[in-house]
Length: 236
Length: 236
DNA sequence: ACCTGAACACCGTTCAAGT
DNA sequence: ACCTGAACACCGTTCAAGT
Image (cartoon, rainbow over all chains, first blue to last red; front, top):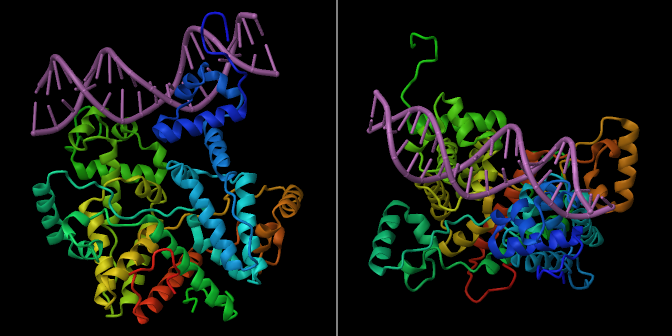
């Protein structure tokens, strides 16, 4: 501790910078992560950060590395399907603690070694199950961002108004204009008007989509599917 | 034309603002679309834009509306699967002309009426095919951002170096460290070293994933699948 | 009704200087 | 080797004023 009562100045390093950035994003959102605010949080002048990260893009790269490094799937059972499933769900567990991460992952232009290692391990699980490199290649593309444990949520996230009368009126307007949206949004709900936009179990939807994918790949594998001469045709 | 040779000042309106914004994004990328640069492009002072869009977020909303409004699927054949397929591929045709659009769509927090109308029409296609509201609900979640015609590309887009010797060396390093990535990336290629990262046919990958999805949904529908009491289980 | 000008509170990043 | 201070070229947006 310095004699003037200021907080002790631990020497800055890359991990401390990245750790503080992740914490700041978790607490205040990704927009709060500016070089200037991060520096302030670390009790340092903005330019001090540039000794440890080349620029802001590299800061974001490092934040993703810090999150991806935390993916720690349980040991495999020898079944490729379970191995892939476990790895993807482990990625998801990780991401759920960092709501800003999906958006940042999507804006990365370079894959870091840590990111490549996660992809390599996932691919290895397919290949170890006897799937061809060809099928695995296309399966990875089809898996898309789900390999990181997230999916783009497509339904509007507008929270319904608090006032029940107003909510009822809004519901009627939406139902008149977009009847099919309301029909599927309220499927199985007791109170349709209050169910709109609040009825979805994210974890269920994620696993539904993941298993739909795994079922499809498993079937193609069993049939000895090949991409040769199939451009533009159904994979069936 | 004004007498001093300056370009004629057509009266600004919302459509002209949005049109110029889309054109600017198409030509110079989304980062070039700032209120200030857009105003300059329109021969107007930045604050003039605020009469036609409330703020930058609303400008981006309007740009997406302009793109989504252009989705124009061919008339249906009565088959739900073909109807959904045609609509999604039409969305894709549209988006391919606006590379900035996926990122902007992902950052929208409110769905506009135009966006809701596209979703409503897509849902209507499932329901018209006799699929339950329950299955259609989860299918829409699983479809995710593919309903807009794009998928998150997961492979690194780093272009290989021009120098063949350097390229060969880089290939060997990556192959040693991430052997499985290289194995699937070069599946079926004649020259593995030059094929890395350049061998993927985006349109094929998109349709592969779309058809995998459609096959899966079709099968669940045929079996009378229901979500009741199935949380956490495979949809099979 | 529509556009302007000046100002405010922010950004990321450079450069040359300090210790 | 690491941190600082001042400056530059940008942002989105406010407010009060012009026509």
